[in-house]
Amino acid sequence: MRTTTALPVLTLDLAGLRATKIAVDGAKVAKFAQRGTKLVITPKAALAADTPVVLDIRYEGNPSPLASAWGEVGWEELDDGVLVAGQPTGAPSWFPCNDHPSHKSSYRISISTDAGYRAVCNGSLVGHTTKSSRETWVYEQAEPMASYLATVQIGRYELAELAGGAHAHSGAGSTPGSLGVPIHAAVPVVLLVDAATALAHQRAMMDTFVQCFGPYPFRGYTVVVTEDELEIPLEAQTVSIFGRNHLSTSWEAQRLIAHELSHQWFGNSLTAGSWRDIWLHEGFACYAEWLWSEECGAGSTDSRARAAHLMLDTLPKDLVIGDPGPELMFDDRVYKRGALALHALRCVVGDGLFFTVLRSWSAEHRHGTVDTPAFAALASRVCASVDGFDAEALLKPWLYGTALPSFPGS
Ligand SMILES: [Zn+2]
Image: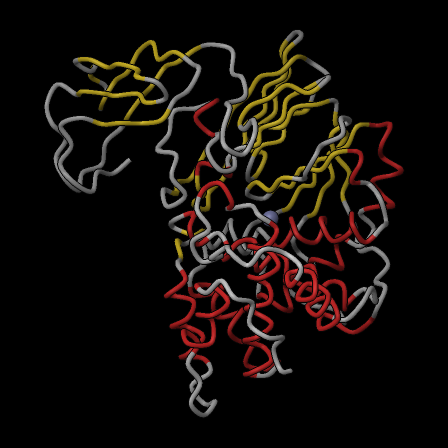
């Protein structure tokens, strides 16, 4: 780590596990204490500002899920394996960290499992060894990653490469740049056939999103399918996790497969510095679903947007999606209305500038930390040629008002 300010005391997050030994730059620390979910470390001398520091924390215990306002999060056991659902506050269930979306780091994760299991973590597999009845898997995530996106998935998974599948609609054509991204599925043997069917369009989704959002921001993408049913799919950096119940060719399943992939750009590469800007993840991912809908012939983006607007009109209009508060940060209105804010932008500036905005946004803030004012500023700059256009004013009623603006363009 590198300190940003002088630190007499360091506070990290760690829940349900016990720290046993801590060293700062090789020297045993004076003292440390665990209070609730906080790990408070007092080095022998205060750490100076803007200084590189090696912090070595040994800890132990049996990780378990953490109760939260959003249900159980973090490390949890499957019938035959392990799943990590880090978003938004689950990371401290398995490692000590500063569990804040603005705190990004590179990661190296080494994990030993019983033989016959595969561990899937973030980034690239850089080592795999088998010793008697244990297998060790080592992954490196070189690009910066927020703690909630760190993951370990363990199961009796077979790894299959997803090649170019049937492209339902030829509109996007081939997109150089996505072809080199390795896409894999980690799936229990019994689900391999179902997964091949349900994920047949994964490569085409990748092509579509590369065209709409710019180059894929990481070195690979792995879809994990658990043998258990899961209530909702999850995103992690370079990995998405689905339950067996999501292996369907229905729109409801396909939209989720598209949604999770798009989070690699919006959420994982470009991460909101504060959860209040969650629409920058979920509104964009919802819009990605609608883009894929049009691409695969399941309904135009505009028709999806209209349906969402009609639906939102039937729901209470009391949520400010630009600051929904912790309880409602995953409310469906944040997703749909966030996507409609983007559709409103597109309707005003036109397709050419709109997609230039999305690609510039992805490129200029690649692997970075973002907020809503930065998006508005970028959109205003990119669309400066549109007479009198002000992105902040356009987005304001969608993001910071409660009344539902009329459908864009109507
Ligand atoms: Zn999402």
